[in-house]
Length: 400
Image (cartoon, rainbow, N blue to C red; front, side):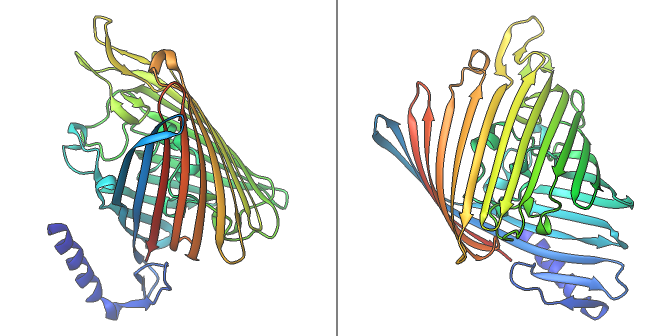
């Protein structure tokens, strides 16, 4: 209730400033409120979105899937504020997650509180094509993770993303772009972050995280940066391609998946080891066709967590590799058919986890682009020497 009252108070305060603002009436999907100061010294856009998901899973072997589970939930429910302050060269973004899935994961490291804050970041274009980001936001990891959860081609992200992504962290990012010749665009990103993930309040543990990413766009920029959106809604009139690679080093990491996963606790506190993660990905779009490919590989100096006397704790770093291939075709009536193949091959000698292969077929109807859409998919998960799984999902996205 107190959060609702706070939001209501904010709305009232904004409305009392109507006489001092130029108010735009956004189209559906462009935000609920959009304020611009008369002298253009600041702006604010307020938006909300939700994803309503229903799913069913059948587990078993040899075609005998008798173990059934169903689930209905508010998968995501979020509020987003963004705009510029003083100058359009100084932007900000603030995003809150309100669903149980959004705020779960609280621990002693987050002050035993829900993790409401997703993004709290400022972006300063301080010189030509150089932009400095500071705060909590997504690291420049695999392309699928950087794509907003509201702009996905299928109901949710792949197994590769679930096992290897480096998500959000607190720190600084330096971004730069330049062009060779008439079209060849190159973008470079370097991030320095705390290395324990989002909403950590106990201070730095272990070392720091260093992330570098390079993106090559030989045919020029995608329309409205839609390389970071699922599907081919922009229907590129000429072929567009992005080839990219990210290398991430988390020095003296204390979690099983770099800045994600379980904390590796031992008899003297937390076990530390340096974890490195490599991502290679590509995005191709032309007219109604889209394709995305990703490869991930994770290693650690010593992936088996130990106590001070050398005995093992039972925790291990999730080392191994993954592959994700995904493509789709968008028809002119905005129906789309998409398919995905994901392979996860963790080091079984260390993790004891078998190889996983997942095959997904999905259908989407885009009513107002990604802002209002209905998506459904069915997946078959094959797990070596273990039970297999069929999963069917239906999701509705609404973005105001």
